[in-house]
Length: 113
Image (cartoon, rainbow, N blue to C red; front, side, top):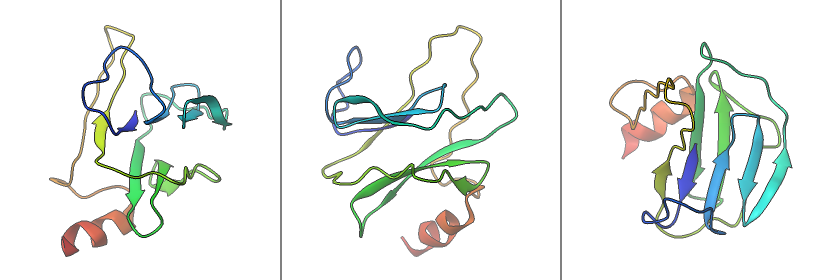
């Protein structure tokens, strides 16, 4: 899950695709792994993705905390949410600001919009 600058890219990962994989690796700028975090998370965890407008960077969160060294810089353009599912039994619950975020700083930013 992550962000993409092209909403039409369904079947390939272009250089403008930024995501955190189920294995904890980060795909960005056409490189996989861009950063290999080797995180372990499961159905009880909440994974998030945010964009810092001032720094033009994407970051990823796990259970309300930024994943250390997960920032991807030099991200510009329109951004669209991306979720890639390879398992028919997967359950995704998305939050685009209709509920409070587990990552607290996002709630402050969301209220300023």
